[in-house]
Image (cartoon, rainbow, N blue to C red; front, top):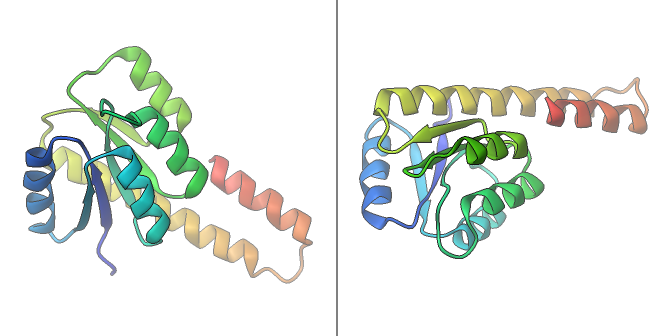
Length: 154
């Protein structure tokens, strides 16, 4: 099975480096970005990222705006928000925009990897469903687009 490819986005370089080492040591692939802008550039260049671990509070484009743009660029990519500054309003807004989960830093690595695995599985299942829809010869293009929209909205 293809390893899960992560993008770690946080302005705290030490945190990103330490987390990347721990995740790579467990068999994940990990790229990192120190800002929302850098994360968006990486996502534009790469089409194999499964899950983004995204800090909420960052200078420049914050985590919520970065999440909005990720969902517009690559709606299948799953995003897990990580923050040391959680509020109920921010968590609700992140989930409304399309975050898969919302965790407090520091978080337990086993809990994080469980959520990452579930998010990657969801992404891959949705990709498979979309491929299935696109290859159906017996439905119209309009029906295909409606089914794909439903998959993306699920």
